[in-house]
Amino acid sequence: MGAEAFATVESGSSKVPDHVAIIMDGNGRWAAANGVSRSKGHRKGADAVREAVEGAISCGVRYLTLYAFSSENWNRPPEEVTDLMGLLRMYLKKEVRTFAKEGVRLRVIGRRDTLAPDIRGLIEDAESKTRHNSRINLVIALSYGSREEIVMAARSIAEAVASGAETADQIDESRIGRALYTEGLPDPDLIIRTSGEQRLSNFLLWQAAYAEFLFSPVLWPDFTRETFTRAVAEFQSRDRRFGARP
Ligand code: FPP
Image 1 (cartoon, rainbow, N blue to C red):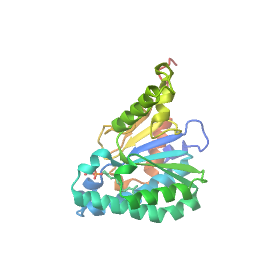
Image 2 (cartoon, rainbow, N blue to C red):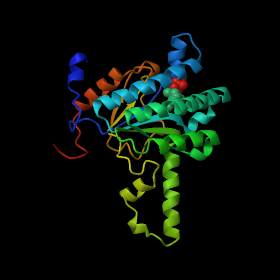
Image 3 (spheres, rainbow, N blue to C red):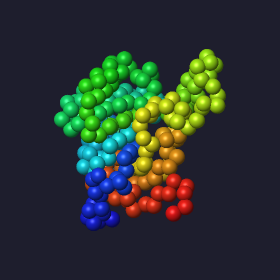
């Protein structure tokens, strides 16, 4: 795909994906390939987040969801977890100012109760300060696991039924969707995973039912707004039928 691919992205076109979700992978391999620490790889990864947001804005994407820290990532060595949490603190403090300028509304999905209280505070502050922004919705998945999300949804619906507030036959797809962290968000149209790995890793399992997948060999720290634009162009060349006949 060359320069002509960029030309096919038309902002406002019905084929621009409304919601793009990204599994940001390859910080560690980028660090090893460049002879620097994993920590530096993650820092470069945080810079690439800005590229993705700018790419999404320029393409006219309205929702961008980034998988920043999975439930399973807590099992990494403690120094790396501390490092990633520190990076997140810095990101939340610094970016909240640019979010206002760029019209970015932030929302965090995942198990907030597992995060440090000061990080929870920063998240609440950023969500509240950006709530009137409407150019793009940036959703960051933090301490997020999709199976866990589905379990929590099942539990909350079971409680509503047990209390008599709802009946079992009222449970449908939309009710389940409303019990997930992603309540109110459209399903992702396009899911990108970087670094050549081809799996979902417990990300948006319910929501991905009709998503297009794009696996890019680019290591996350090398991801640029052009990588994003190319991914959108690739999406535009796909034929989505949602199970129906043409
Ligand atoms: C995967 O690379 C990346 C992560 C586990 C963390 C993602 C975090 C960032 C991109 C930076 C922080 C984000 C924000 C929003 C501030 P890996 O370490 O699994 O790489 P590897 O598979 O090559 O080892």
